[in-house]
Amino acid sequence: MARFMTITLDSRGVSCRARLLEDEAPGSCAAVWDALPQSGAALHAKYARNEVYTLVPRLTAAPHRENPTVTPIPGDVCLFDFEPWEIGNPAYGYETGSAAHAEQGATDLAIFYGRNNLLINGDMGWVPGNVFATITDGLDEIAAACNDLWLRGVEGETLSFARAE
Image (cartoon, rainbow, N blue to C red; front, side, top):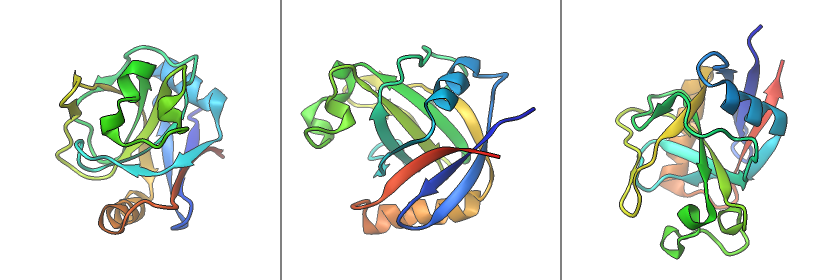
C-alpha cells in the first residue's frame, strides 16, 4: 500500500499531497518517513530555479544517492544529504545557528514546482538529489504559493512535512 505525506507552506496555509516512491528510493523514503514530522524555515533556491526547501537536522539514516536527478521536474520531492563542509559555506547566506551550520551537517527536503530546473552549484558542481516522492494533489496551488515566495520573500514562512492518511 502506498504511503503519502502532506507538504505545507504554513503561513500561506497551502498544502499538497505527495506519494512516497518506495520502489525507486526505499532508503530515502524510510529515512524521511521515520523522521516525520519535519519543519523548518522555508527557503527559495537561488540557482536551481523552481525549488522551495527547508534544512532540517541531518537524517542519520539518509542513504547516499538513490533515484538521483540533477534535472527535477514539477512535482518532484527530493532529499539532499549534506556534510557540514558542503552546506556551511558563509557565501550561501544561512543564518548562524541554523541547521546549515550543525556539526553533523544537514538534510535538505525540497519540492520542485516548475520546469527547467538544474541542480548545479558554482562551488561544488553537480548536486544530485534523491527523488523520493511525487506530488499527486495540489501541485498548482503549492506552485502558486512557491512563486509568491519568490516574488515577496520567505521571511516568516515555514515548510512542513507530515505523514498523511
